[in-house]
Image (tube, rainbow, N blue to C red; front, side, top):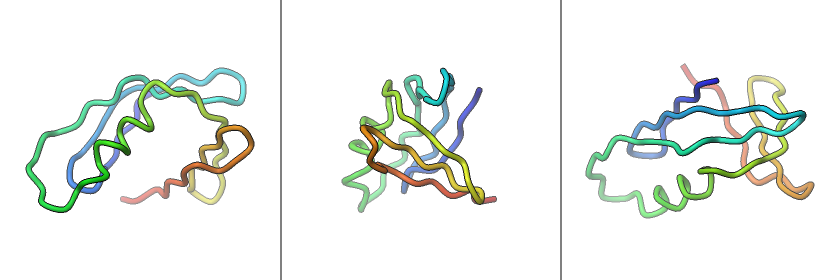
Length: 78
């Protein structure tokens, strides 16, 4: 499938693969706008890239878990 998002300054997109109850985000690409206050943006993208997470979707929220701990929650925004 395809994923689109916003990482605080830049837009991102990429693909994902679901295997059993896990989701793997393939390398994400992002725009390269210059933003003053986005020191965590690169770390955020590195965190997501090429990792496999257990996932759950509930109430329009995607929860990613690793080793039975919630590591990130995303909310659908239009």
